[in-house]
Image (tube, rainbow, N blue to C red; front, side, top):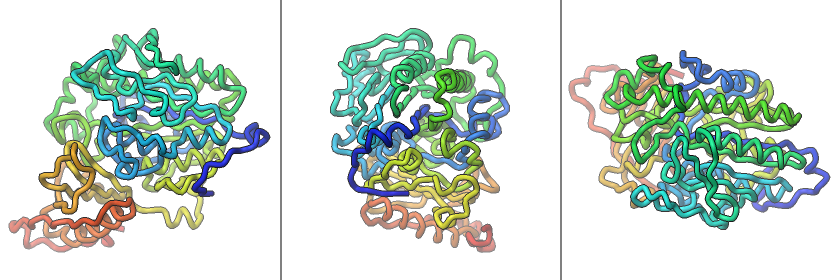
Length: 475
């Protein structure tokens, strides 16, 4: 992987050989919505086939389970505390080095369609006369058909976006179909030169103004009283009344994903187009707090992800721990472009096709997660363990970091994959907590955060007879 602080223009000759790039980005989609991750409802046949034939990121995690911070990370390859968008309704710095700027400098046409949430637009009291995102706050994209907060300016059959000139555009059809139609039209116009398209859906996010998951007409009916993930089945929340609509949204998104691939095939450009499918964060249906995300649990942070196209077809199943901050350098690296030094993630290209490269051998065995708004928290997630801390009393809407945290969660994900038994006060796991505490502090430092201390949890005296276990006992 090449890294370069500057973004240098590429020659027209080299542009001819460059692959197109399409990002198919969903909002609030759990990893276990997909068949390849064990969902039995056959919601995602297109994604499942795509992942098996391309490169599947088996262990993909967001670095921030909140909409705007996660999106800032995906546009820049930086953690949210670095981008400055560490909570919702903050503007992405106009000087930020973004994917669009990198692709623009390499001779690509760049387009953005759908939800942005990086323009700092205040939703107010669900005001449907939302201000459009001004040109300088669009991250450098040439073509624009977007809205900062589509959940506050549109509904499932009332699709509204703003064009390059900030004129309101009403699109026909269910919102997922409307966005997809617009994307196919853009590709058809742009296909004669390399293009980078970021297609950002609202679904399967809830519709805020009525706290509902509005699937297309009839799409929720087949899933009433059907399968629930074990965490939603075991914990109090609102999944029992809303999961049918959520599943219906996921099914429609998968159909749209298939349509997009069909369109690329019909234009004879599918084989020269890199496609990424992923999401910003998951959804826990009010089982972990009083809303849908903003927690360290896999229901909030684990998402589906896969690539196809040049370099990725037949890439296999990547078993390493991958973070959302790794996606921007991967996209640039895959397109043969320089990766700016500003990016804190790393390209997954060395991991493809069962690689045993030095980069693969030295890949981090954990992902780091920052959590804001509901709280100021930090977490580290390995294959086996989940360890999280919280700054008690800190206002996650007012500050991005803290100087002191307290241990809050420890889960053994092998024995308890849906995180139903918190071991944070277990004496038997005291050594593991100490090891993970050191690892988390190191990850916080690597992310550029100010120094902090972590206060250990109080051991449960009823568990004093337990045998101490160590992380290396389970490697």
